[in-house]
Amino acid sequence: MKKPTSAPAAKRPAKARRKSREEINQEARDRKRAKKHRGHAAGSRATGGGASGSSAQNNKNKDPRIGSKKPVPLGVTDTPVTKQHKPKSEKPMLSPQDELEMLENDERLDALLERLEEGETLTAEEQTWVDAKLDRIDELMQKLGLSYDDEEEEEEDDKQEDMMRLLKGGN
Image 1 (cartoon, rainbow, N blue to C red):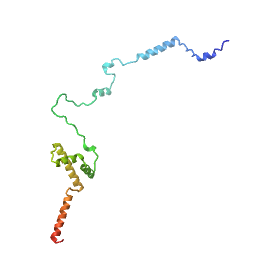
Image 2: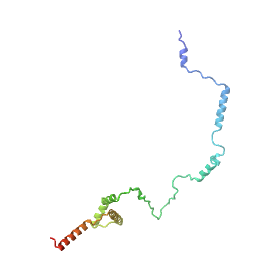
Image 3: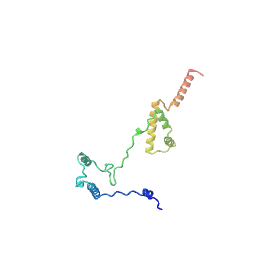
Image 4: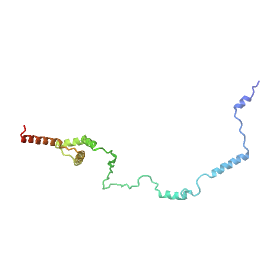
């Protein structure tokens, strides 16, 4: 006995409907029409890509090169290249007291001052740097009302007071 054939027929894909010759011809014409309109317009290479109006003028004026337009000297030059220093405005502003403490705790300044006390000579660059830092310390101390000679003045005042006591006859 044969089994019913209805079950295997459901598993097979349904047959595709065949197209008529007219439908096939129409699809071919549509494909040909779409293919015909591809690509650039005739003469587009000679005219500059078909851009028109003010946008074409803007493109002509704009330099297509990227990067710096500054001329670079080729070969050996007599003038030395000068580096631009960054402005010091990037540093945060310190109060005079904080700046004075920072300068007093500067290790480089201390090392150079020790070398000076030992009798060594500093290079011109080091000497100008030390002078600038010492001048800045003097300015800050004047702003804050401080002076180096506080101890010396106290000693002189004590001596003067002692002299006054001796002159007045006080024991």
